[in-house]
Image (tube, rainbow over all chains, first blue to last red; front, side, top):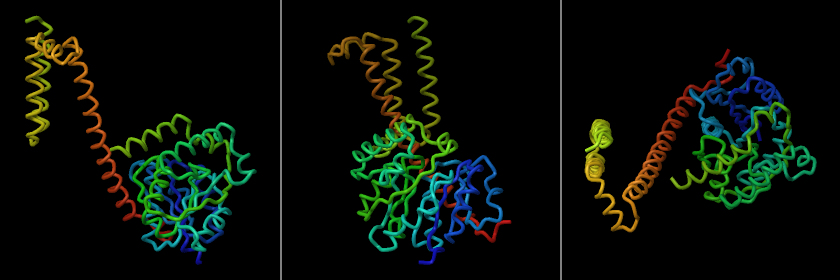
Length: 227
Length: 111
């Protein structure tokens, strides 16, 4: 497959510090890159100078879920065959993409979710508190969505055109990760998991979600399911 | 009639006027508000009525009855407002998304 048909969607909110480095790590692979500036107050465009990326901007900050959907829709319009969601804070590794898209290229899956819990080294790399939180999130997510994957909140995922067109995310903020599971089940998409390596830096941990926000995500999901 | 009753009636009439102004083209809401606010004024002037209704319903005091009803209406109002907020949020998101995609730029279009 021509790497230009593989679109990497990067939602970006005030990631001036990391965005250039994240994109630079992807460029050698020849993928098409879409950066969705989600209403950042920082000058993100300045960081993208001379980089070969497709760029779009939300006028106001809507949230990661909304930015991912915008990027995904834009990628579909540009003729993407495979779409990969990739974080802008440098947590995801560009070298994992090849493994992540493999089940899609071989038509075994419509969507592949990255997991930090399939490889012993990756599990050990997760800070203890976060590991406990993710295990609880997995149970809550399984009960809410009916899909029991090993890593409930991994933002690193790949999908084919069919899946991308069906995953119309309505959760603007962080509850989109669970909503994607609900949509996967609703549309009977073939899914699988792939081990992915997450780079935990001090910077990314500072920006990570607090346990309290996780409670918020669950409330968001329940409210929006009811109303 | 004591001072508190007078203040309460003035507040009810003021709120009622606001509702009538804000819901100009909503006949059902206007009629519902007329019913609620006129009941409010009657109960303010004749507090015993609420106690009698409360006794009939087995609640006890009239104040308790009003408190329970207020909670139910308050929560109902919150749910209605939240669902309207969600609809607005979805519409706003869609608007921003369309504009964002329309104005997106290719690598060669940027300096």
